[in-house]
Image (cartoon, rainbow, N blue to C red; front, side, top):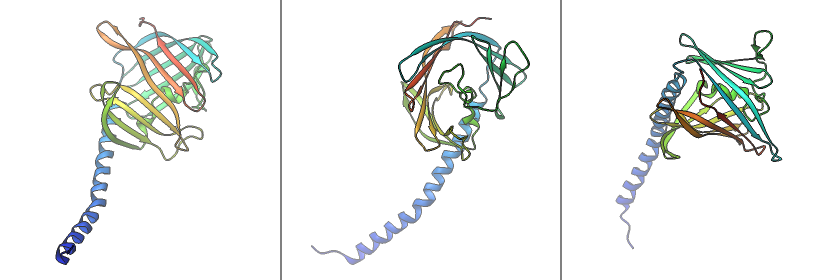
Length: 243
C-alpha cells in the first residue's frame, strides 16, 4: 500500500491546527457555562415568597438503625421590603431563623419561642430538631457561592432541567464543597440537589416528593433529604396552609 507524503503532511498539519484550537474552544465553553450559571443562580436567589404565611408540618426521621420518629414543626415566613425571613419552630419551642435576601448570603439565628430574641448561630451544621436538615440546608446558601456553572440541560423526573454546579473554595469543615442542582427550566424550582463533602464524596440528596394544589396553585407537600453517608433520611411533610 502506497501513502502520499503530501497527503500525510496535510493531515498532520490539520491535526495540529485542531489541537491548537481545542484549548481556546474549551476556555470559551467554560466561560459560557460560568456566565449562564451565574445568571441562573441570580434568578434562583431572587425567587421570594409573595406573601407571609404559616405552615404546620411534621418531620419524619428514620436513622441508620431504622428507628423512626415524628416531630411536629411550624414554619412561619414573614415577607418585608425585598427581604424575608423564615422561622422553623420545633414542638419543644426551639427556633431556627433564616434571614434571606437576593443580594447577600443568608443569615442564621437560633433561640427559643419563649425567651430572649434569637441570636446569631455559631454552628450552621447543627441538625434541626434531630433531623437530617442542617441549619445551613434551610438557607440555600450555595446559590450565593462564587463559582456557578451550567453543566448541561437534561430531563429529570419528567421535567426539563438546568443542571447547575455550585462550588466553593472555602467549605466549612464537615460541610459541603459542591452542590449539583437540577432546576426546572420554567420555574427554577428544585427538582433534585446533590451535596458533596470536602472530599468530593456524595453526602446528601434533596428531593421534593409530593405537591398539593391549594387555591389553584401547586404547593410543596413533601420534601425528602437522604444522608448517603449515614444511611438516614428525613421527610418534611406540610399540612394545608393556614393563615
